[in-house]
Length: 134
Image 1 (cartoon, rainbow, N blue to C red):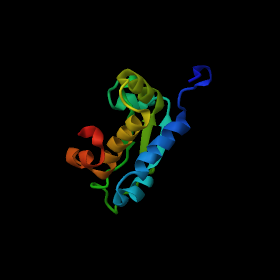
Image 2: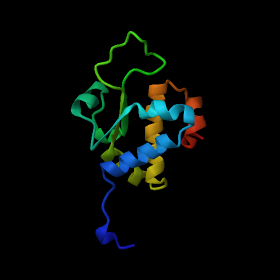
Image 3: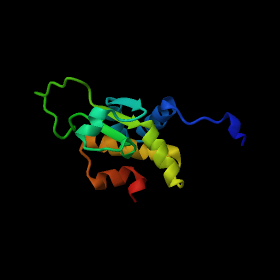
Image 4: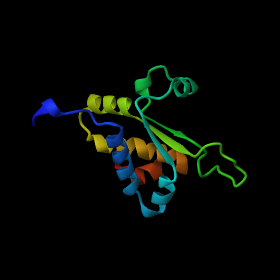
């Protein structure tokens, strides 16, 4: 391969990988998963990191921001839609550091983990969908 023309995967590439992971979900979860806004950023904001008491922005690859479906009520009046944030640079850093996993698999793993917060899944539920846990 001629690496002189190669570039790092951009936000659109990460988004495409995350959406492919959603499309691979069991049918019952696909629609509800697609209702969660997906945001791709280089890093988490300082506000997000401070709220989670994380000092190193490379430690956070993804974040679910919303009310889990298991806790939602018709009385809830959300100020914003539920969202999943994927952080490109920390994901790429973890991918390079691991060196033994395909980038699409890592993105899918992060996406599934964040969707688990949305759906209120247990570790067993996650393991049934995300083979990473096996």
